[in-house]
Length: 177
Image (cartoon, rainbow, N blue to C red; front, top):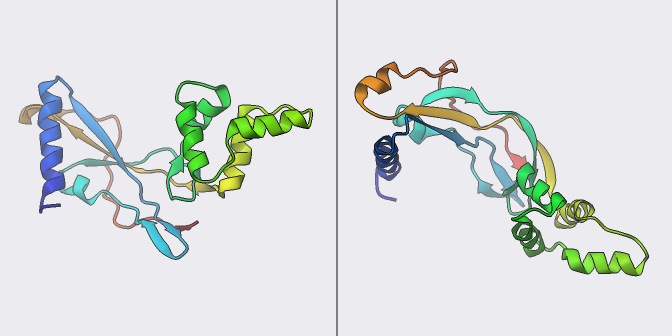
């Protein structure tokens, strides 16, 4: 990317948001590096571009246990719930797991039926996660940044309900997949 592309893009986003009447924006950076077979999949980031664009650092988001797939991406709790409940969007989540070499749900349901057993989508999900080698890892929370958007006077007096903290300087310890 050309020099300053990220900060230019954020500046443009801020102007467009203000034009739509939006008064503030929030963004997160994920500081947890991910390593697979000695290869760095994701370096983790502390939000340097957010710092240089004067984002207010507001600490970390909620710490939680996340499910990391073998490609280094996260299977969100919401995506897993879609599969369990058979909600709209579940097919995309199932296809993502099948692409990572999980056995397809219809195939496993048929196999269980031949054995006289039922297999719920939630049970399939747990089996599929085990088949692909997903890992549950404790995540300390993503870094949270906020920007008031609008005219200069508003940006100066905008109330933010969280205490501004010193910017983070280092990523978290790496997770080896």
